[in-house]
Length: 211
Image (cartoon, rainbow, N blue to C red; front, side, top):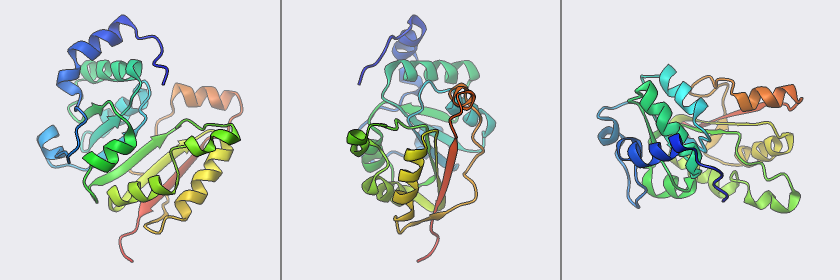
């Protein structure tokens, strides 16, 4: 993907803060207890962007631990700077493809929640197959959630919202939920979308606790 321009501050963060806050990708299950030095609910955010929402949620919920997965270099650098400036002990970052991370690094039934906020909608019909939320992803995400754990997705593309609804409704391990693990704060991106008249949809699904 195009990485965009990395600012000097983001570049310094990637060089100096990565050893402190970045969890290297490697095939093999990670231990959140070892990473955070405690036992707490674990939340995985897929596509944290510039990290504004991620850091705000982690700061508001010190009782939980958060791992953000992002491939965009400037975004990772920005989030590392936020972690450092806010001294967030409950937030770490993995710079790698989210599906690989879920599949190879996250134990089954270990996540209190998965956050997927404003993923790339791939709006052109010929590109819909590139959308992250597909049947295989829904099955993988459901497997990684603990029973009762929630998948919270948000989008401002009505077509993608309907697409996700269909996919998630057809995943046998999931059922609709009234709310997610946390209340999602409003981002600058979302506020701009509202000004343009884009409808924001939040979708909440929960891993079933029984058959």
